Length: 205
Image (cartoon, rainbow, N blue to C red):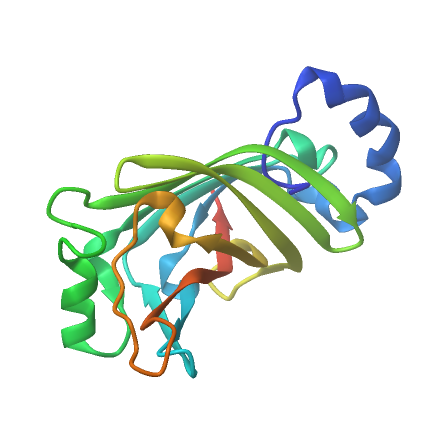
């Protein structure tokens, strides 16, 4: 994303030529270190269930940090650490199954992490961040499309920035292969998982 990540040296010339045309001017004043505010942020997901409906869930315990470079967003970085035991789909039985050996094995792999590796400004409020997502000890690339929602100073004097993001993954790429066949054809849980991020981050003092 233009605000998260590092361009490699081969892309430097291209990034320099396009930065002025693609960066939102509002971002220039936002350079600095930020901490994600979990009380006002959401890291969620959607999975297809029984081929006919969607089940949504989220993680309620996570930390994260952003290093934003408003003048050159490609120099920015992002990190997120999620506590897998905090998964919440609105069903205690389903959450217990997701924490078990069939899925996340949270006793053995308590955390899911994301580390940005590159970024680009797409123009206007749109950005793309690429990085590495680690689940079950497996690390695979993940690309997130983001929209900058703006900045504001809250009533407590905190300088905030907001982003909404989305991505899609195949859970089998991380070894999450448990499923059950349906009598009518198909499977109980989709391989494709939609990820969504609604992030509010506070600028560090």
